[in-house]
Image (cartoon, rainbow, N blue to C red; front, top):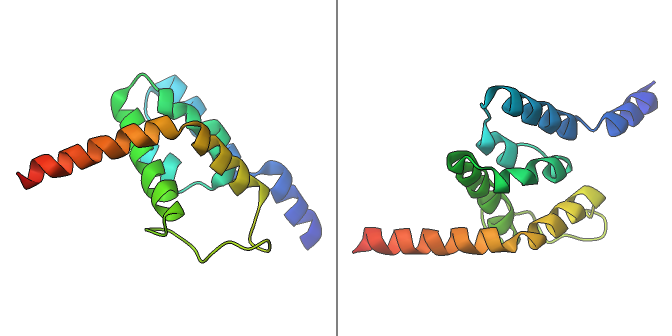
Length: 125
């Protein structure tokens, strides 16, 4: 029965399910927790949530981008949220797909990082 439960969880893909439900609710109500969508859900959700980078609502888009930046970009550099060096034992398909998606949208991260540096410089002056 445990094997059936685990198989069922893999088929349902809980984080992708949560992402789809939250995006549907956002379409219906205009309310979403973009920080949660970018920081708390696993790599399985990213193929669904990545479209928030193109959201016409700038506050949603910026909050989502900020969360992704801190979760993925800084982790890739060994910063916040990073894990020990990945080996073939720790590799997984969802994370590899997420990293490929993020690389395809590197323009958004570069613009965000540039804006952050400008903001920090302005605060120091």
